[in-house]
Amino acid sequence: MKKDFYKLFATNFCGVMNDNVLKILTSFVAVSWVDAEYKPMLVSMAAGALVLPYLFFSPLASKLPALYSKQKTLRWAKLSEIGIMAIAIIAFMQHSTILAIGSVLLMGLQSALYSPSKYALIRDIGGEDGVAIGMGYMEGVSFLAMLIGTIAASFMADYDNPIIWYGTLMGLAILGYLFSLTLKVKEATQANESSANPITFIKETHKMLKKYTGVNPVIHFLSLFWWLCASIQMLLIIYCEEEPLSLSHTHTGLLLAIMAIGITLGCVLGGKLDTKRFMLGATPLVGIAISVLLILTFILGSNIYTLTTLLVILAITCGIFKIPLDAYIQKRVPAEKQGTTLAYFNLISFVYIFMASASNYLILNLLSSKYVFLFLGLFFLLASITFIIACREVTCWTGYFFMRWHYNIRIANRELLQCKEGENLLIWPKHQAVMDPIMLFGTFYKEKFRPLVDEEYFSIPVIGHILSLFDAIPVPDLRKSRKGVEQAMQLGTIIEGALKDKTNVLFYPSGHITTDGKETIGTRQLAYNSATILPEYTRVVLIHINGLWGSEWSRYGKKATPSIVKLLLLSLVQILTLTIFLRKRRTVEFRLEDITEETKKNAKEMSRVEFNHWLEDKYNSEI
Image (cartoon, rainbow, N blue to C red; front, side, top):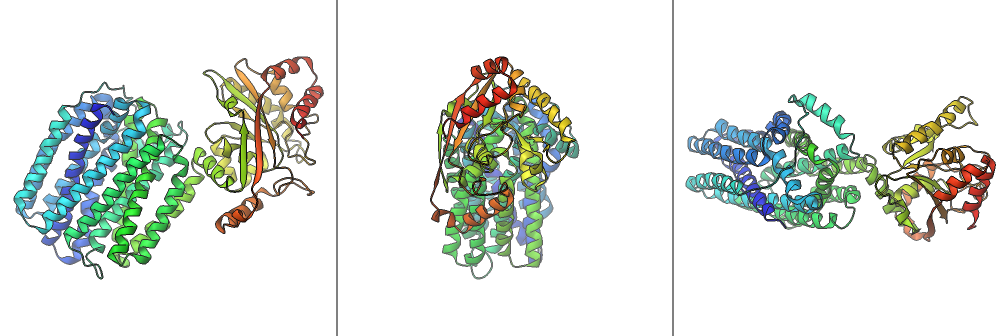
């Protein structure tokens, strides 16, 4: 690992530790200055004060990496921390609740302003290949700092010695500034196009990030991690003091620290896993595991040993959950847009944290504290399911994951889908069943194709939304309306435009699933017309699909095409009841064949009908 990473990690460690020492001391010590009835409100205020500046100043923070050196921004922020700690020390000396909350607010402002610069430096130091491991260790260091800060503040709260409080706060501020001076990095240029108005900034950045598939839903899903962490940290301060646990500040701090250790381990593990496999696809499943652990904590969390065990497992799982999402944002968005994107992410995530403070306060005033665990569990479950259909790669990977339970999928010549620079693909699959498009996109979840799909599927809830993720092109059914003739004539123009834009296009030449096991194209025009206008840089790949004919998804023994909605619901029931494991796995084979030269030659020499017969023979040669 590069030396500058260690310097950045050390600077970040001091800052995060100081954030937590100040916040925990304020939560534990300042509450003794007010009546007991105001304690939940004060804890929520301390947590909210640290994040409130992110809501208003993240747009300004996004401009700083473009206007100033990221390293200089970091150093000025760390220098200002020394002054903020002086204010905090005065607050504790004077027993001023307002001044203590104000110092936490100033630390939130300082953190908000330099956070985009801090995280953008990860890519500057490690390059794109070092993003996942850099983010893993950066977040691991952050939670280690939270761990030590939480333990230290908890001990200091129980063993009243203000001199140690003051020395810790000021010492960390000075040490963080000194570490920031050692950082020497060659920085990438940052764009400066965002508005300083928070509402305008959110709208503009959200629109800008739509260009980078999946980034917006990933940012919102990742923000739930911060909602969860903030909620649990606030909750345990209250929950652990209540019956039957009745823990001291020190014991509560140790429990928070144990969670921080678990998150640290999970972050490091998540970084290592994400460098070896596509962990983003697994994040909804990890999210569902988190929701189960939270619900179990609600049911079983009255025993300290059971609570500790569940929270440790929960923390490790949360760390694994976080890093693939972090890395995806950094990998998907270009370097010049990193400052704006990270500021936007900070703003959105701290909106979620602010809502965590509000929801915790509301639940604590209406119900017993343990119901926060139940609320978080149900909310995380709903969000995880929603995320599955919010991001194209995740949708595909999830489908592939569950299909492997029932299908033995074999692939030959997969490398034909890898495009060289300047190339794109026109893909013609065989159409044995209504399942094969789902299986096709699930199996090849890493590749991106723009499909042509029967327009009737666009009107089906959820399925229509998923098709929009793929930028699918609706194909009219000419048997139902003659208005579709004009639309069908336009398809050739749409395909030609997509191919010229070097987009990978996928459609079924037959236009329907087989009724007798054989591919029949007949007099259809789309494949032939596409072949006649094929750009020089486009390769044609045929996909032979065998093994689905005779399944419940095919027309075998049926008079009509089976309902995809009914079959998907049936599959969901089989998955939830685990009866899918009682069924014999069906072998399905995908064999890819490059037919570019044949296609170009035959499109020139053959009529449309002859071309279609040739294509039918290619598909049916293996039957």
